[in-house]
Length: 292
Image (cartoon, rainbow, N blue to C red; front, side):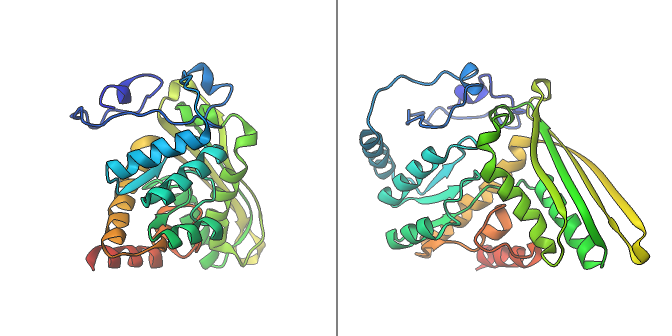
């Protein structure tokens, strides 16, 4: 891992490079993890195993290493792979965090399976520390609370990492658009307005930099129009990584306290939790867990 993490097409800014060589990379089933475009950048292995054989080897590995938390950072649109690894976590009795927009932990089916297995899970679709979704969400919330009428809003995102190349395939974006849209508009559920939110383009020379444009159009007192425009530029990978560090720590707390099933702190850290509550209230719940 300490070598592989710096190899192209990985292009995140290097903010920590004192890796030890103890982390081992193991193969897993590719399933629907690669698209026609990403196959040009990434060479998948040719190991021929059945799903049952893959599952047995991964579950055995998780148990042997006494893994506390399994993180799913699979490419957007990898539905089959997401379900596969969630099932592996359940069989290995390993806590599970779903960083990508397949609705695993927020579904009754899987949250019940994690509960029955006696292990905690958190998800779905990780928020960045300060990214496009959280900023758009807060703007919609304050505009709504101040009594203005929202007519329409859009959010366009572009970047140059492999995630954005993968998302050029529109068929893989169904759950992603649902996740990002719900995270924003639920803060103004008393209003109905047109919206378009989600990835828009891959620009290779941007590398891991993500550029976001947000526009909100509406009416203030007396029907007088207003427009809000915002541009955000952030490094995509570390923006997500900092949040996941918190999630791992919280899931370890849950394991120590013998908590099981879906965890409510997901509302603060993920775009598509079971309960999409106010960020302020969600923050209080998170701090309470850390303090207690």
